[in-house]
Image (cartoon, rainbow over the protein chains, first blue to last red):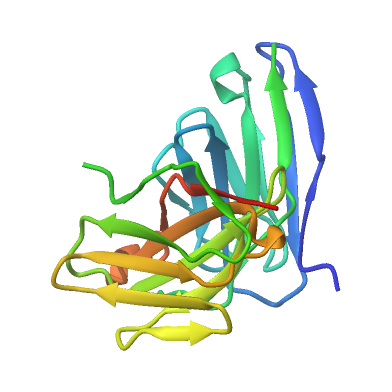
Length: 114
Length: 113
């Protein structure tokens, strides 16, 4: 059972390069999320999508764009990578559009920008 | 002020010990509370939800104190396999931010043989 699948798992980018992190879930969940996790900062929400066709900014959206391609897929794009975007990125999904449901995470993507 | 605050630890305890973690939250209207567990270089996974009346799952007990705005996690009879980082998670639950889940920075636990 796949759950939430994100790719790539590891990536090294040069400053100014662009890349897209892919995420797909097979649980028919409505809500999907992108978080970044940095030492001492905890998980911070970059963008989320409450349902297919909608996206909203989270706590730290600058430097990122997202696309909710369909109900299954939610991608995160870095248009011009900066060293400050070196982090671990987690995609997640949840069944409901309101609070109270479990969030399921992908295995994470380790991104280094040099 | 951060939405959710946790003592980062580390907590180093011997096998069989009882250990407790607390977490405070700033929004008094918060409606949903969770504890997640995260192993090194892995994704967070739900450990347990926290209900108003408190709840227990085996060796784990979670409590909510709305008056003081904190939640707690108690682990009894610690096992080596309990070594991980424990994340406190709070959802405000308001209609326009129902999707905002706020994560604490985590409390690191190491159980020593």
